[in-house]
Length: 268
Image (cartoon, rainbow, N blue to C red; front, top):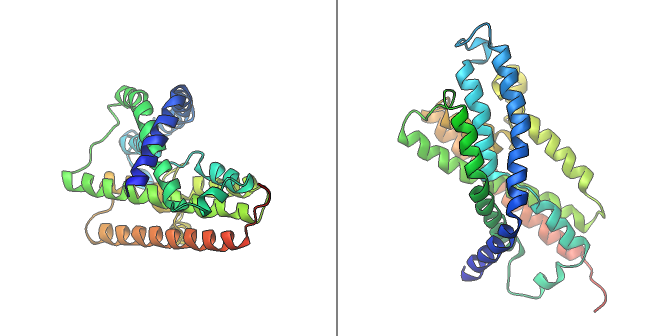
């Protein structure tokens, strides 16, 4: 494991060279977030404090979007899939086939180093933004709920990474996979609850979406934090989320094994 801790250290040094890039990315991410908050404040303007059919009060709805920003900072996959695809396309993957280094764990180490660097740069602006909306930011019901939220947050990060890794493996067969990645991200943006809470969807549509891993990439940990899932439903949800993580990991391993057998490198 020492070699992967060393990779994390190297990844931190490399990522911190792009501090300004992380900072500007964070600042510009507040623009759509501010737009969504303004939209929902307008929607709830005439019935403040009323949850309506979706079960969210105005404060809960705005807090939901603030939590979306928090979860994204800790778990989002930014450029890992593009970098993995580039390694395959440009032949850089060959060096990892000749060294006692597992490429999946190598990339996972870089993913965590990237998250640590991004959190270090984004936490300040994010904290200021939340402070400006502090009247809407709700605390979890109790410490136990917050602990379960943290567990789900780790599972969310792993699920997002393994899914992206498996998607990037298509580069073994396709020269350009950007279109497929954009399609996946577009569907994930809707089905994970980025655009709106899944509660506002019809019950049948919501049930179908919960048969996929996407709600567990964002919506589920936020539901835990807000105390909207508890007891047996909480433990069942965590078990399902863990199963999706395991399935994504096995699929990533499968795609890597198939891809390596298909891969060919030529020249010196």
